[in-house]
Structures are given as structure tokens and as C-alpha cells.
Length: 79
Image (cartoon, rainbow, N blue to C red; front, side, top):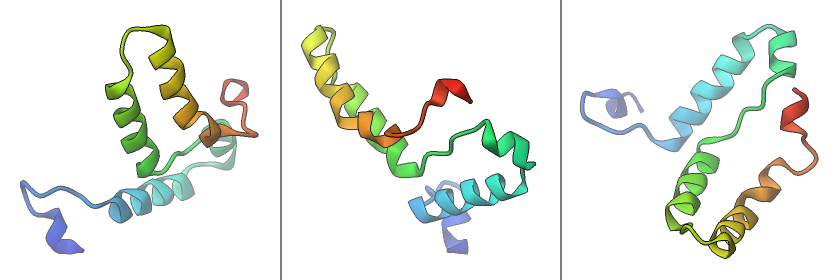
């Protein structure tokens, strides 16, 4: 995977996810409890969904329905 770190190359998802988990493991436990870490696929899906969501409320609701389950059982605002 080191070849992917050359200038001008994109990182693949597994490297990004690994680094996110590594960063999370380096944080103090009280900080981790206050944070929520999504994987790289969430961000990809979120950006795709936001790009397809138009300005009408119905399209925005449809876009939200595609990502709402990603935080099921988690209250991100209580962290």
C-alpha cells in the first residue's frame, strides 16, 4: 500500500479507515467517548447523497433517508 502514498495518487478506503482507527486509538478515552468516527464509505455516501439532493424538500428527505441509519442508536448531539 505504500505505492498509494506517492505524490498525486489517491489514498484507498482501507488506508483512510486504518488511519482513522489509529487516530482513535491514540486519543484519551474521555475524548473518544465524546466523538463518533464514521468510516470512509459514510463520507462517500454522504457526498453522493448531498450531490443528488435538490432544493425541494422531498428530494432532501429522500437523501436523508439514505444515510439516517448510519447513526441508529447513537445520539451524536449528546456527545
